[in-house]
Amino acid sequence: MVRRHPKRANPGVVLVASILILVLVLFFPEGILGAGPPHGTMTSLCANANVKSDPASVVAGSSGEVRFACAFTPSFIPAFTVGGLPPGHFVKAQATVNGFVAPYASLWIYDARDNTPGPCANRSGHLQIPSGKTLKILTGDWNYCAEFLNVGQVGLPAFSVSWTVS
Image 1 (tube, rainbow, N blue to C red):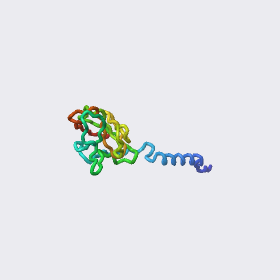
Image 2: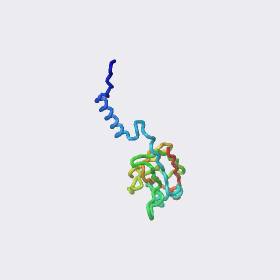
Image 3: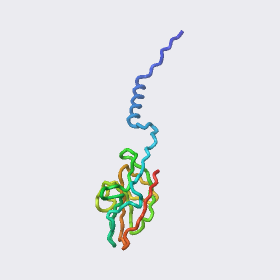
Image 4: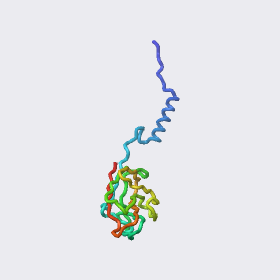
């Protein structure tokens, strides 16, 4: 009768496998294929029609920019909030804008904590809202900023923005 010794695992293979498992756990905590992406939300504390502008009115013939939020005073309330995600993550959303006509020139969103005066593109986190394009909007509070040129006697027209999160 021939007796066979049980096979033992090669120590080099065990070491390499252990290191590989450790690397996968440390650098890919969701797994190799990854977990489904976290799903964020976009919410607002005011209806679209109740978003306030700052300044509340503009001088006829002027050009500049105007910010929009749910409220600026007596306490600040952002136009909308992206939440339900860890910091640094984003939602993918597409805007539908209605009534955004001249004298408006461009529409942006920006980090609501930024009170920088001047052009919308100078504000933190600024993203221009393009027609039919999807934006990646980070977790946080957001306001709108619209640039206008040579406003007429009737002032700035009302417009609406609705979002579809994908």
